[in-house]
Image (cartoon, rainbow, N blue to C red; front, side, top):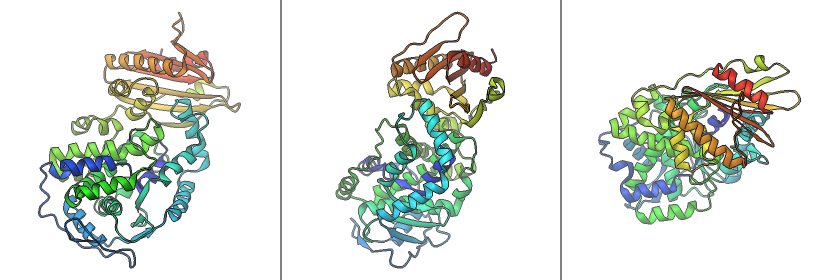
Length: 446
């Protein structure tokens, strides 16, 4: 799970995580080769902020400027420019200051502390990791530009105002965000503070970023030759965000771009940009719909899962500190900690709905409870067997199956209790097996 504030930070920054994807698009024809009819889309030139644009020669000999990039993006995406887009260049140092201010405003220390504890409870974050430092470090070294949806301003991170190949691709992506905002008000699509559904929030973000990524790929395929693509790769080397990394935080940051891009590609094949435009009026409701676009197209919504009042049932000072929807993406990441990525994906794919609640006691004891609904009993079976293997591999311990007790696995940091009842599963991390057993039974109504 990712806090709502971090979701808002993601939409104001674009990380350079898709160079390999873009190179593939250039080599294979990319999104532009999918049969879409982009001819005849209206274009409007946009004046840039004074001093913020230096034209350069493109591979086809045409002068490249912010105005010409905007014209091309508007034509390729089929969205008009309804108002001028202010554009400016900033240094990486200036970006660092802006990012620090954004993190401080949108991600208060209290929220960070709780989310960090939850991630550590679930094994998604190392015990000695600092979440803010990790996110800031990953973003600060990878951001090439961003569109500020609050001010409508587009900024490019560069020490020079000359438009390099990498700047050009960044501008294509961020100009797409500006056009999205003008046509669909992406600011209004962003989650309110404390929405309680991080999974849906990430899915909406994946639509927005996937759209910009698909447009970016079309732009690169049309405008860039192999030499420029190679230079783009060289310029990006050393960026810390790696789509192949095993880090949960990195995966959550790249998800909107990579899986979101694949989601939008499916919409494009189904109905072109009209299908993408329609998705803004009916955005995806879960990461499951992003990861399995046919479920979105079929109108298969997630199941709403409600947990009982665990704090009231336990008493003894227990207090609920955090609650959100536990989606397929997060479950896949949990499973992948101890089994192969392919096995984790298969086991998470039967997700129907889920809820997470995190509780604390004044003495510092912690409890995390997951209530999960699966599409069928067999898929619930597959999940529990895979989660058992994953947790046993991660902890070096084994689940104990004893008469009168739900299966439990004890570690130095607490006890995991897992139980299944039909297509429902309870997974609890508690201070001891007795507490975990009680909460799991409460969730399943046993």
